[in-house]
Amino acid sequence: MMRKYFAITLMLFFCMNIFGQVREFHSIPTERSNQLDKMGIDDSTMLNSYESDFLNEVFKDSLKVFDFIGKRIGFLKGGSGSRKSDYFKMHKTHISDKNSPCDNGQLYVLNETEKEETGGYDAVIVYWSKFIIPKVQLIKILKSISSRLMINSK
Image (cartoon, rainbow, N blue to C red; front, side):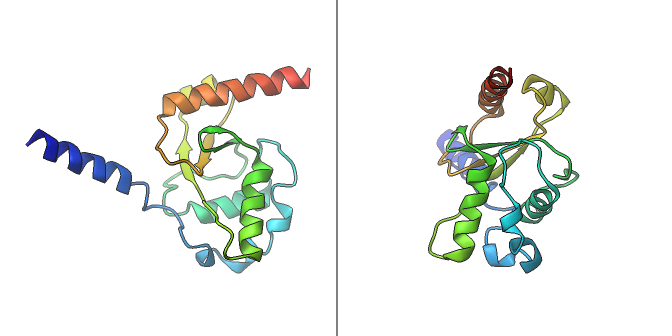
């Protein structure tokens, strides 16, 4: 009985990731995807208006009250640090070649305490990860990235 409960819980947990965000690239409005050349042009953690609009569209079904406008976002590829430019480059490559793989990723919105712990990140997008990464681990990774950015800017 316990095994059955565990299997059902595990299945529900992993299926939750499937819903709540745009999975088909063609469902993103053309006016957003046509502006990809204005996205990922720098590696600032702050999003520009084009990036914010695009991500609001990609994650529109899972946002609830979150809005990407004016937000500081971390990007993690497979659970390790990545650059914003790499994420948008993947989307640019996919739009020019539909056979090129593209993963919108999973959005993790941080609360005020988590935001403070990470050095100011509002959310993180994890893409090309085979596993759901616990928020505790994400916070550690973002802290590490944030401290390296501070050291490099001095």
